[in-house]
Every structure is written in structure tokens, then in C-alpha cells.
Amino acid sequence: MLSALARPAGAALRRSFSTSAQNNAKVAVLGASGGIGQPLALLLKNSPLVSRLTLYDIAHTPGVAADLSHIETRATVKGYLGPEQLPDCLKGCDVVVIPAGVPRKPGMTRDDLFNTNASIVATLTAACAQHCPEAMICIISNPVNSTIPIATEVFKKHGAYDPNKIFGVTTLDIVRANTFIAELKGLDPARVNVPVIGGHAGKTIIPLISQCTPKVDLPQDQLTAITGRIQEAGTEVVKAKAGAGSATLSMAYAGARFVFSLVDAMNGKEGVVECSFVKSQEADCAYFSTPLLLGKKGIEKNLGIGKISPFEEKMIAEAIPELKASIKKGEEFVKNMK
Image (cartoon, rainbow, N blue to C red):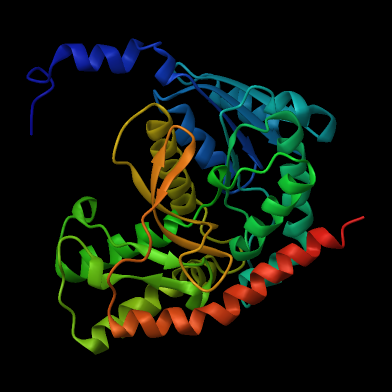
């Protein structure tokens, strides 16, 4: 490990003081007062990539913004409260992250959140389509398998749809897979990378452990067990929190990781790859998560599923009907909107 003194001073200075265009991302968080929104806003405020952070919610945002604004980093922070202030929150944004909505309680599936969260996502994405149509839209609100189709249909209605700019943030599945595999194998989680494809609920979450780097060999019983744990990890947290919410801190970390990758790519960094649930032709349904090469305009190239094991092929086949139903549910919701 280089000591602080041995590190090139120039790099540290650039990190602290850089005002080049590339460290000027204007990011909005919609749902910024919530369990995910607050720690996510903290991580974004802490980043040298962000120059302006605008926070929207229907309660408490002035307080959250005042609190974050005292942190000694460059990003300016402003809070916006209620629907009439939403347009100003979005104007000029490069990236919008949406964790708004209600969390799961014990015994609930992500789909149980549909009725409440579908309307919230439809309303917020309509505002994005009107006030920052060029921005990258990163949706965390569950059920992601339905809220991404909702965002797409809303953007289409407003004539602002670009399939390369709407992302369902599934990063937490990858983060969990990396962590659990690292724990099992005694590896450093920062060096483990497991692609997770499919969707973002239960059996639609498909970890491609056969593609893990570094390569790991697991007997089938361990493989089945760890796959199940990755798929049900959200429920693990919901149960542990015993009615006090769902995964918020790990989700905030994963959301920030995705946003930083996206901003790096928008700034011209090459070779940035993240999995995300997007409009896709990689599987037998209209949306599917796979590794994506990110670029200045969002998705540069869908890297597809790649070579997989028979166990993983079977999981894909079993996931498709559920994915199709969730996607249709989202699309129908927008069709039937007043």
C-alpha cells in the first residue's frame, strides 16, 4: 500500500480541486428523504464526480439538504419539497436517481409494492421526460421488473424515449453475489466480480457464478445454496429488520456505485461495465439485465449473456414467464393511466 506521502501529489490535488467539465455531474435524487435516499445522497455528496446535488421528496428535504450542505466537499446541495418544486429540482440534470416509494415489510413480495410505487414512478418519470429529457434515469424503486417498463412507456408518451438512458438498478444483486462468494471462498470482495442477469426479484435474479472472476469451483449443493441466498438476500434483510424496512444502506451503496460508473463513462472513461435491467433483445422478453458497456450517451453496447452453464440456462428458462408477466403489468399500468 502506498503511504499518503508516496502517492503522486498531483493526483490528490486534482481529486480535491478539479473543476474540469468531467467532474461536474449534476445529479438529482427523487425520494431523497427516505431510507435509501438519505444514505445515497450522503454517498453522492461525498464524491468528487458530483458538482450539484438536488434532492426531492414530499417531506423533510429542506432538512436533509441543510444537513448535507455542511459537508466539506464541492457539490452544492439544495432540497425541493412537493410536486410544485419538482421541475426546478430536475432542470439541467445529467443523472436522476429514483429510490422513491414504499419499502417491503415482512411477508411482502416486491410485487406487493406495485400499486403504490407504480404511480410514484409514473409521476416522477413524467416530470423527468418534461424537465430533463436528456438525463440518464436510474430507477431503484421496486418492483424494478415493472417500474422500468413503466418509465419506458411514460417517456414514449412524452416523445422523449431513449432506450440507452433508462436503467433499472440491479447493482445490489451483484454486490451481494460478490460479497457472499468472497465470504465462502475467503477472497477479498473488492476483487470478486459475479455478473448477475435477468431481473430483480426472487428467481428472476440469476447469478452467473460460472463467469465469476476469479474463477471459483463450487459443488452443486453449495452452488444451489448460494444462488438461493443471493436471490433471497433482500428478504433476509427485511426479516432481520423485523418491520423496520428493507435493505437501505447496502442499496444506497449499490445505487451510488452504479451512478459513479455511469458518470465515469459519461466523462469518457473506457471499459466501464455494469449489469442493469434495460430494454433488451438478449433473451425471450422485452427487458433483461446483462452486463452493459457504458459510454457518453448511456448504453454503448449490450455485452449479452455470454457462455453459461446448464444450471444457469435452466434458471433463465424458469425466470422468463415471471419476467414477462411483471413487464406486461408495468406496460398495462401506463396504458390504463388517466
